[in-house]
Image (cartoon, rainbow, N blue to C red; front, side):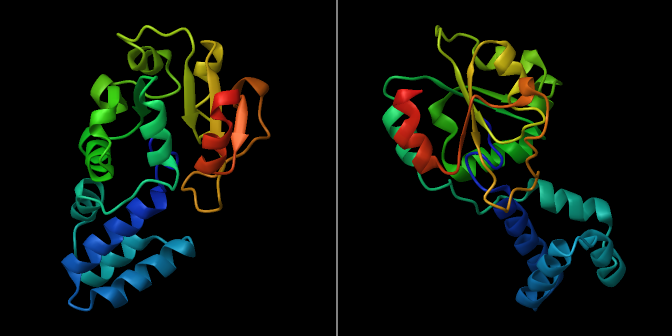
Length: 207
């Protein structure tokens, strides 16, 4: 499985970070948070604004953003999938990012214990779509049938496709941090595409 925009909405991590930063910088944090979100949605540089107005170092802002303890929740249907299929399947996680950031997300979601392997790019000095990341995910697992659920067409599916896995894409509902583009070479495309975890739950046994 992938993490960001697959098991939860990455925009919620951004919102959580903005909440944290606004409380750090302002007594009127709700107003600042709303302003930050408006600037983000307009495509403006939020951090440059904060540096200029609040005289805060950009590196401090980045540290607060990356390493705060996030308030995030799993997508609807993920719990059902995990609870049902963990009885007969082994789960691993393959995610890119900083170790502390990604592990804070995993802990906040309460899913640390469900994974046989957790593969974070910073921890193994390798990023998707490197084969090393996916081989690490199945290390110690005896399975002939592997599935990978992700969202990023640029890097989530090409390698597991080459490894003979079944690949599943959770389609963007319109809020993904990284927009999806399915107009690409066939080797990058997932085997299946679903609009929600409900659809994945309803269809998984027939894949």
